[in-house]
Amino acid sequence: MGRGKIVIRRIDNSTSRQVTFSKRRSGLLKKARELSILCDAEVGVIIFSSTGKLYDYASSSMNSVIERYNKLKEEQNQLMNPASEIKFWQREATSLRKELQYLQECHRQLMGEELSGLSVKDLQNLENQLEMSLKGVRMKKDQVLTDEIKELNRKGNLTYQENLKLHKKFDILCQENAELRKKASGERDASEANKSSHPPYTLSNGYDLHAPIHLQLSQPQPHTNEPPPKSMKLGLQLQ
Image (cartoon, rainbow, N blue to C red):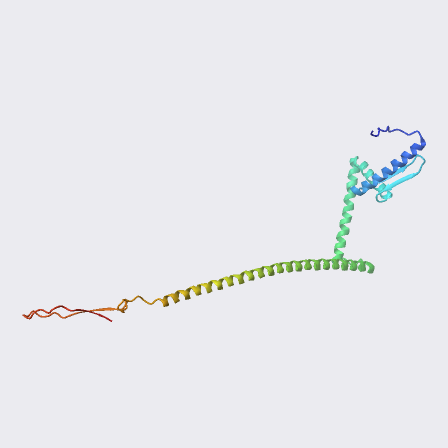
């Protein structure tokens, strides 16, 4: 069965009232501490018991919390009045103007200007500040150069690996080209050997088929009463 709703009113029994106060006080301070940690809030809690005892908690310090509270409360009250609001912003403008002048003066001193009004101690502090600034600049420069060198080395290693891969591919292509040349050379030699092993075709009577042919006609005989020659000679001479 769930817990019943508690009526919020003064507890008459002093013992019960003290027990409830102790429990609620611990819970309130715990919640205040958790709020300051989780939400990065500046929290201040002040508790007075019925017997006059003080219990408090502050995330920073109670004095700073109270001063901040009083200042903001005063500013809020001033902003309700137009005349007070004008004075408030005039004070803010004056404060910002002084801060700007101070920063400009510090900048000129860091640049080596307007040093006549500084004492030896001020000059020594300025020198130490410049040395610390110079040290920080050098450390940052060295870090940037180191990072750039690492990046260049990384890119160089990648280029070297790609170069090795290209060399391997080139060697493989050279080997394949050499094998193709060797194979083509072997086929050409085999073709020439086949041609040399088969002589040109010749007639069965021993004459070369491709030898030149010379034709020779016999001279005609005159018409006489002599009987005609037995036959006309047509000579073929193969050379």
